[in-house]
Image (cartoon, rainbow, N blue to C red; front, side, top):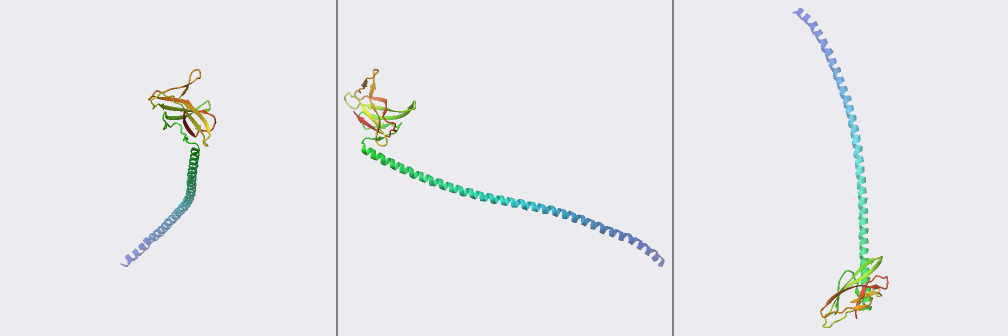
Length: 229
């Protein structure tokens, strides 16, 4: 039994040596592996740190840009409000001035018409229904020929009497101040030899006449007056 024991002991010692070498090799391998992982981790951490720095910088730039945009928008909004306020104030002033002009115009018209009875404000292209025995309506037009302004009329005359009549009416133009600036006669025709011929109307007969207002001033006509003759 002792011999067997002695024989076995050396064998155990020999077999233990390979185990120690294997353990140290494993430790070295583990250390190397840890070193590699640490290096890889540090590289990855550096990348993450750079990424975070770049992301932070981009965020700051975006925030600054948004802030500047908000400030610019507020400034534009304030300027627009100021412009809108000025525009409304200008419109209000224009409206007041227009009302004042209309009031002055009405006062002037009243004064002139009070000074010269029978004046009617002149409007071109609109028919005037006249409360008259013979002249029933008249329309005034304004045309331009050879750089000259012409004023024409179209009148309708009706004989409501039982007698033959020779209607003759005078249309007079006045300016804003009530000064005569032109006139024309209705129901007078010129023959070929330039003789004045007055047309007669039978009882119940109607006739239309057209003619030109002879202007004696360059002032724009503002009123007209009808005088029966």
